[in-house]
Image 1 (cartoon, helix red, strand yellow):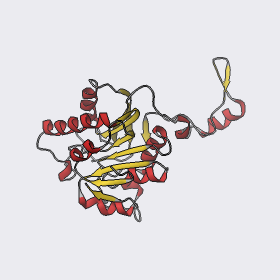
Image 2 (cartoon, helix red, strand yellow):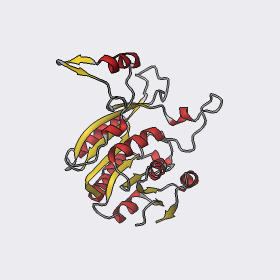
Image 3 (tube, one colour):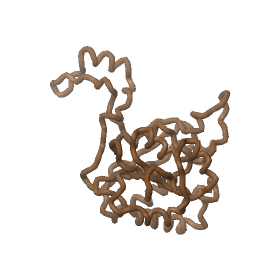
Image 4 (cartoon, rainbow, N blue to C red):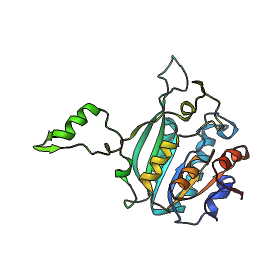
Length: 259
């Protein structure tokens, strides 16, 4: 298949056409079965997980032995998926919590949901992880300023903060896309209901790939992953089954082709 395209295709038609052992990094933002749209609505919970496990089984042989995989979902679904993947020959690394800083609803019968989950896996113990390139700011700037001059005594040694910040942890405080695109302080209806922030996708790609690596953008949606991959000099290939999002993909200067 040609690279640097998003294919207008169903995932079950698309994945089998990929070469085995060809993908360096997978970023998959599938349906959550939360009824955001027709494509996110399944008749039963069993139907949803049958769908999910089927595309996951097709996916794994397409990944290189050095590949990494990021899987988006809500916490409940992620727990079920994590349990299913225990039987697969892949390595679980992190349950990443994306704190979006905005709740889905103002419910008073449970805690307000303000997070989503990202499961981080690799196919083996040999994989790319550019930890130095994704450092994040220290929280206490005043304390770090003091430490940069005199250091902090730890176990009999002086520790000095890294000028590029601290190592990235597994709780990501990144504002949701709908709050990043306000007009005159008002939230606008998004072009796609589940667009992920550029900052978050960029972090995954920088951390888990190198230039010219091939990124698989499954369930491409608005094409964010492919667009960011292109901007970071990575190759990409993706699929999106809903033609209504093709215009958004093209606005990101990403070409598409019907399978």
